[in-house]
Length: 67
Length: 463
Image (cartoon, rainbow over all chains, first blue to last red; front, side):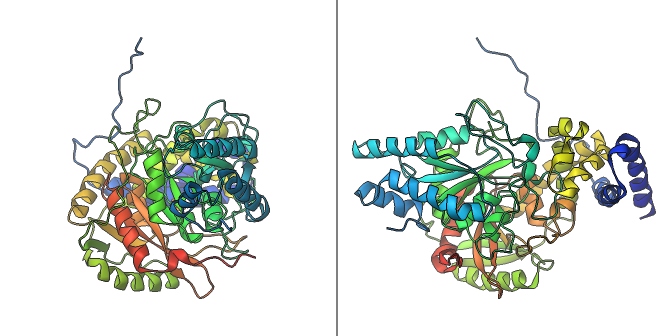
């Protein structure tokens, strides 16, 4: 859980750096809470085993305008 | 003759028998939407001129012997994220877009016009379809959606106006959209039937893109049968939307003539509120009279985390310009004005991991479902929040919604049906989730449920 909390703090620093001027303390608290949830989600996602050959199910389609 | 709370089939019979005219029907809906729909914050724009023009055409055609099918002359409302031509605004429920107008019709709007349906209103919705992470009913520039069942209860979202307009008997059907829960939730909280089709069943052309790999369009109506009639009109391939599948669809209203095979995930209702748990337990008893109910376990995978990562990443990309410009400051819900900035923390490789895992999930769930007609569960774990109160949202991770996450990410069809009322008179719902492209199977199960139960015929205490 410490790693999750550390990652959330890292994320918060990023958001502060990019958008801090737009956000008041109450909004930053909302962002922090959101980032803590995000960090938990990312930890769960990264813990799942995925076969090496698993591909995203949205293949790019080459495009050519037909006359 | 009252036209409220009458099904598409009932209204169609009256229209064809000359007991009711399409113009009178459209005017009755417009009147109800103006008086009651506004009170429920369900309406963004009444499309009176277009409605009466379409209704007059339907009247001429039906009198002249041209019948376009079950929706001919039937009024409907469209969630205000579907593009409409003719100067009608398409606001996406969001103040920054309240003046937006398109010069074309979304494919769904066009197909409904071809089927002879009559567009009477653009209906209210949670701003940007809820994709910014709202957690309170007041998240639209038109105000919080109100359930017809209580003046202080939320209608659900994000297709809030679609749910409350049908639930109040103001239109026979409405079109909603769902990325995660946005058809089933308002259908539940407004006491109506909602159908989330398979991803790719219905063209998204002209619909606001929140998450291009998750968004689906579908109907809300009084019955599962009506949902099938609407799906029949709007489904099908579309050159304007490469994600719209080439698979043909025809609604089959026939009874399969055999017992159903239902599955229920172990502990499916454990995290739901007590009235929802109790209603679901009663529902299982009824379902056992319609067939078998087998408890199953799903593979241990991070369904909700995966779906949230996809939703948050794609939503942030779709609205990158609004977020980066600071335009989200003009949104209504306070959390929508700040929390989208958090999504900068999602790395490309995490988004791709979620997409890759989704393929694994899709196969695992299809395997689990292959022995069954439908997986059943509560269509929403919580009853309608009180206006002004915060609620716990699965999109923000505040409450479990495994079936919702699976359905959203794997793109599976589901029908939400009324399943009873709480002691406070608020609706609760049941969902039938099926295999990809099995809309007819889940609709058949929902029809059987509605033939065996009275809940879809209960009416809200509207004055």
